[in-house]
Image (cartoon, rainbow, N blue to C red):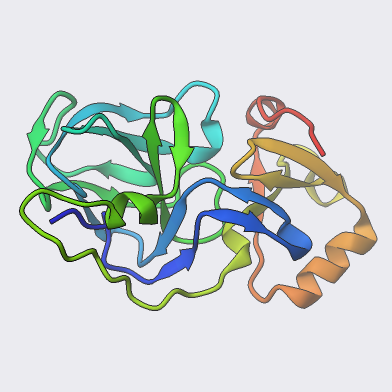
Length: 210
């Protein structure tokens, strides 16, 4: 029976969002501790592993292709489990990688996307679709609301405290400048928000957007 790649709580679902982090979320974020084992959501093949060109915010991604032609992206992973390699054929539940915090993310979670013919579709719809051999859809654990996983904050490490703070949209892969007053408000309203100090060359790879 198809399943999510992690048993952790669902923190951020697919679809439009309102408020400070308005926009479309194209996956399902599942939270857990760093190092949590991620498994194959269905019978599939590991077709690629590592950073994906043009999608640097996702960090190290395990890309899977299931028997029905759906591609699954497991983002922000730390590393593959010992003995696992690109090209491996996997059964549902087989271990793939360890959850991590690679890429631009302020919280520990796996960002799971399901793609069909190039379109990023709702992982819940994939879970609920009819499956051969079973008529019981997967029932998720209660979700946790965590807006921190949509936006990460960073600045050029060479500029120190005088540098511009950037809000990095982890889904769009773009950044925008944050005013000092806005940053003070963010720190006051989002407990535990982190500010990543990143190299100039890495910051330059993230295009400026809205």
